[in-house]
Image (cartoon, rainbow, N blue to C red; front, side, top):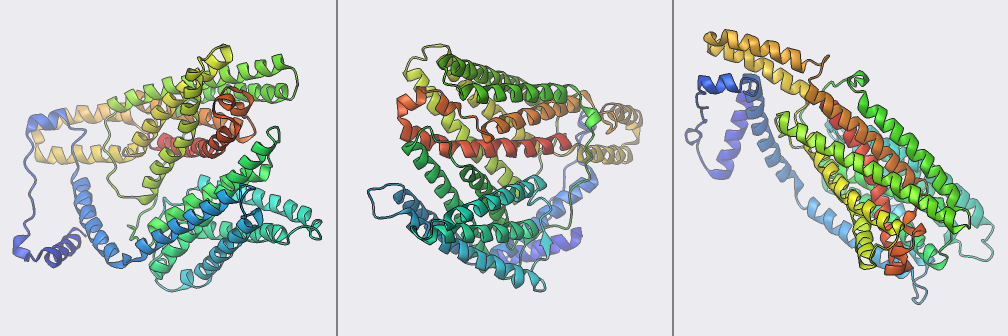
Length: 552
């Protein structure tokens, strides 16, 4: 395998640089001194690891050359299509939000119907033609389309389909006095939900090798269509809140926003995997061992229970007209959230300190799904960052007078701190070598060093004994246990921080300081754009923390 990879690498170098095979000199590794081996015996690369790295780098280089040859103008064309659809959709959606212009909601729905139909036609073509051809899908990305992402897509897709059914039944009664487009739109959208959910569920892992340019354009059409649908739902919700501030916005708007974000993420993964050559390997076998942790889950469960209780009290007390009861509900809600993000920040700091003590190699494998996980994490966190910083500015500018304003400011500041720490902890954890990989590397290292230096037999035996006593899968070391405790606690804390806003907690509108400072229209737009990303961030964090838990 190594010889084949090196020959392919030499051939590519000759083609691109004009060098002959005699000019290609293989670098020889330098000798390692015995003292360095004795100090770092657990961190030395094994022969098999060195072989894998060299062969992997050669194969990756050849794959990059082949992928560049197959890309053509498809990447550029698909990007142009996506940008143009997004800009046009943004203009139409924004224009239909104002009554003083000639663009109405009907025009916006006609535009969306056209996008939905075109996207469905491409999905049907891909499913019936492209994916069924020989040599079309030679590779599957085992990391793409994780269960939590496809499960969320299926859940919100079914809920959205249910909402469309109710809309159709409602609008049919108004056909005699209203536009038929208002009935046609939920019908088309319901069919689109079914087709897209089926398509993404069964083809999310595809690395298609045929019709690549057409497939890239189809996937960017899918991505931009879902983003335009998301923009339309956010705009419509903001308009309703602006016209009737006390209106409880339709649940369907919230469901569509979450579904569209999930579908956009899966479409982007597929777009990145078009024409990609994937090595023939699957996920490492990692077992979930609940017995490895105790404190983290217990504290996390207590926090979830306390959060649910305070959330129910908050929702009930806000229904009353008594101002004291409403202020009491806000007080409890602010204090609960401050406690949650404070504990999360402290535990994250502990985890980051353990990272510094637990030396692991960094994963060097190029994986678009892992890169997307990081981008989604950082991008989705921007929504909560925006809301928090706008709150900080409003609270500081008005003097933060009163205990509610002070608690609101404290919550916003601590949220910014917690988001930054958690992002660092998750990203660092996702890019560390899994424990069982490091364990195997250390065992290979010991055997290799023993063959090279028999006089180190006693030292190696003591190292092996210490290694197995502190790093056994059945009895994790204290550093691994601490990391697992931190991950388990953060996972449960993110769940309660997802539940409260996802099921209706809106202290941004119940507490008037931001509304008075920014005016209702502007603040409603900020919250309606930032909050869906914040909810998605918490869900994505749960999945990422579970993966960090497994590889710790």
